[in-house]
Length: 599
Image (tube, rainbow, N blue to C red; front, side, top):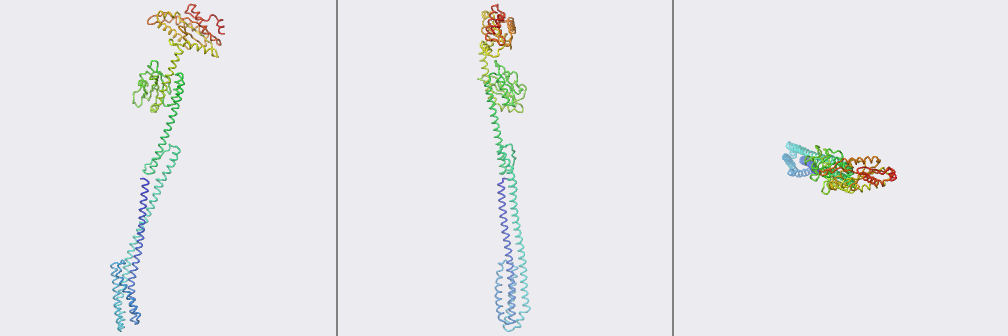
């Protein structure tokens, strides 16, 4: 029940009890007044009866004195008393207004009758005395008849007094009991009023208002200090305090929600800041390896509950290979056929193992962890795949991160496409399109760099020329000539490996630069290349092209020597090899010339 309702009820009850107390006090006062009136009536009736009896006594005395003394004054006093007696007797007729009962009225009539009879006897005695018979008059006034009438008058008066006393006592007792009852009711009403007041004061003000407010004060102070972790006790009361408690609970819930939204906003800002940092570094990458390292560093910071892999598609657009991985994903594969990923098929992000609501990708294997495949697209072309994997406890993290991952995937797709395009352009600029070897520009740049290097290093240069190359073009066509060029280039790259750099100098000529190698090592390498080429038969469209041979010129520059002329000196050695019949390796003319050139 609401406090206002309880207060109103308490006010109403208090008002009713107060009015009842006032009424009972008034009735009690009126009872006291009635008691007083009853006593006054009793005194009036007793006085009336006493006056009648006393008047009769006075008349009797005056009549006797008159008869005995003959003094006219006593006769006058007798008549005065008689007149007074008549007035008292007339008052008897009005006694009913004093509240006398029938019995009392009968007794008053008896008293009046007895007084009248005494008056008759005394009048007769006075008449006899006045006629001169004093003795008879005396006998009448002191005789038995007069005594009997006088005694009867006294007895009636006494009985009347007893009856009125008894009635008055009964009335007074009833009035007293009624007054006591009203007083009791008044006291009870006052007690109940006090009890209601104390109950309202204790149970309402203390228990239902003061105590809850004291508890709420601490809660409100903590909420004012942004301490939304405080627990607001549940209060099922449907009153103002309960509504206030509910309002505080709503305030706390709103504060928690606001704190949660602020925390989410901070996390969102942090995430966006990390994504921005990541995109800045991705844009600054010059190689896919660098991009893979950036992705592997930032994605675990952005999504610590998600492991994953970054895949790039091969040139034939049939499969993907991993470029980077983080946090050891269980569903990551070393090679993913394009047809095994629903995300790549649809060109849209695809969620697998999410409450079994969608078809899982085949490449995730038997793992039951939720995962997300986000295709990397650029200019409507598939570039790669961003694979993210959650855990059973953080399955929702995959869906929560989906929007950010799509933004990241869009930027990664463009970045990877730009890097791949840059690499292709770079290859076109520095590589030979036919053989895949570095071109003449790269050779010149390498020699220039070595020339400008303050710390000159030992360098050997091999110049290779295919013998009678024009014969292959003339006899088998230019396609056969291209096969010969590529075959020689493949053999050179295979044998040189990491020991040097291979270039296509131009036409059918190739160049090899070997750093930190002595002339003997360079000459052995040249012989290995010449021998392998000469012993590797070639065919084209089912036709045997015959034996391919090469002539090789070798020039070396010791550590600290001049590098600028090493290529030209190797070219001279190549000319010497050709002059000596081809299919051979020649070094510089003699050691003295080599030392002079390098000095």
